Image (cartoon, rainbow, N blue to C red; front, side, top):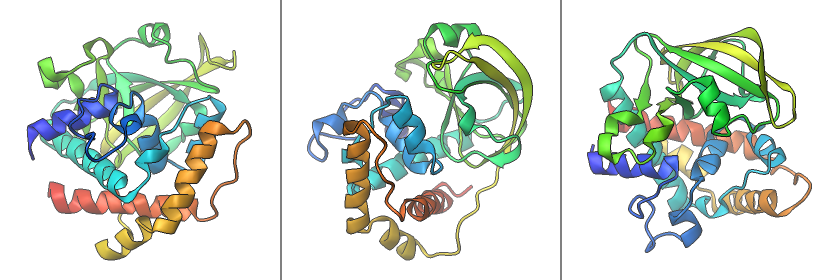
Length: 270
C-alpha cells in the first residue's frame, strides 16, 4: 500500500489533518479539518455504550462523517493503519500506558473492538497532559507479546506530527487479557480515584460474520439508516439530554465492524 496514504490516514486519526485523506472537494470543512475525528471514528466501531460515554463527557461527534462516502473512507483508514501494523509490529516485551473509561474495560480475555490509543509516556506524564479527564477513570499498562499488532507512530519519523505524545495505536482484533491491580492516586473527571489495570496483548483473532461483501455493504450503506444515525449523532451534539437510540443501531454497528474486517481480510492479505 502507498505509504503516503498511510501517513495521511495516521495524521487524520491523530488530529493533524493534511487535507488529503479527507479533501475539500469531497467533504465539508468540519470533516476535512477535524481535530478529534477519532472520537466519531472509534464511536462508530465501539460497543453500544460508546455514544453515551462520550455524550456524558461532553465529547462532540462529527455527523457529516456518517454517509456512504465517509464510511468508505473510514474503512480505508482502518485498513491502511492495520496494514502498516502488520508490516511493522516486530517487537516483544514492549510496554505502553493508557487512560480510558472503566466502562471500556473487560476483565479476563476479550478482543479489542476498535483502535486503542496508548503511549510510551509515563502515567504521570499523561495525567499532566489532561488524559485523566474521564468519568470512571481507568489507567492501564499494556504489555505486548509476540504477534500483537500495533502502530508505533514514532516510526513515521519526521512525518509524525505529534512526537510529544509518543502514541502507539493498538490494533482492533488483538486478543487481550486484563487484570485489576488496584486504585491509583490520580482522580478522574468525576473526582474519583482511577483504577489500575494490567493488559497483556496477543495476536489478532478476526471473526467475520458469514455474510457476503455485497450483503454487508447493502446493510451498512442503507441510506435511510444512515440518515437516522446521522440525526442521532447531531442530537448527541445539540441536546442536553441523551437522545433515543435508533432501534437498529447495535446490529448496524455489528455489520459495520464485519465490513471493516472483511476489507482487511481482502486487502491486507494477512
